[in-house]
Length: 389
Image (cartoon, rainbow, N blue to C red; front, side, top):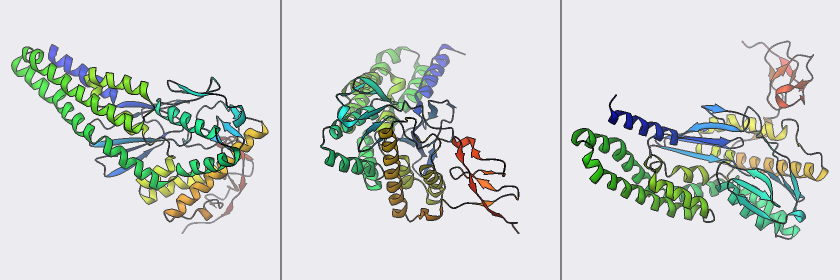
């Protein structure tokens, strides 16, 4: 292998690494190829652990798009905020959560340090990037300053907004407007980096690269960086430090520049709940399939329902889950689905099955009393077994 081929191989490897990204548990990835059909990716495809999973983005922008949705990463209620959600979006379990509870009248300071959301100077939640912690901090500052009666209304409105399809569509349209320039610039730069440069070097050796190709390359990365900073400022006006860091990287690192739109698409819609995004992006049969599991999970959450034994913390978890159920029900009815029968007992698949788990619908014999996969949730009696013709 020649030096030119080795250099090109290294550049390709660096670029492919840029196509990988990590998402903490609690976040769901939506990916499309050519914008025709969206896929739902609830857990890491390449690697995963108790903290999250590794995903990949379509390597040829703008022929693919990746969105990450999470909703609120913690529970809240009239009593305070709780660093815990009973909802389980991934089949492998919930994210690791501290269960820290802070009453509204005890909130003295809210700040962001990198990817960490700090309440009263202590870690409350950490994200994949600075975007969600920054937006959560701004929201918490607003809510904590409100009188109790206004705060309750704000909490209900905020939770409903995370399930609002109209707001999701509006934000998605705003995102696509902001990245329209980057779509073209990143595509042209990718062609230049992996097409024009190798061809010129193989045809005329390294001298033209030093005199013409390298300056032209940094003109393009500088323009990409400029457009990225403008879009980032519009979408995340308060994330100044992150904007400066990424803008500098995209101006100086060619392999990263062609992925400049990724932080924007992965962060702009993260505050919307995954079921809101799924209702808007997925086909109805696919959405109904995952919505059934989501409905059962909210009604019969995995044990423990709350990691804190403090009465106010348990009240916050119950309030947040109840309002989440109401918001999800409104969303389902809006798109023409009725969850009234989704909690009914299934038909037994075998004659020996007499009980089932109301959360995961796994079936058991009479000897079983709880479902270990759902944290020890008690089983319920099944419908009778019937032979299929």
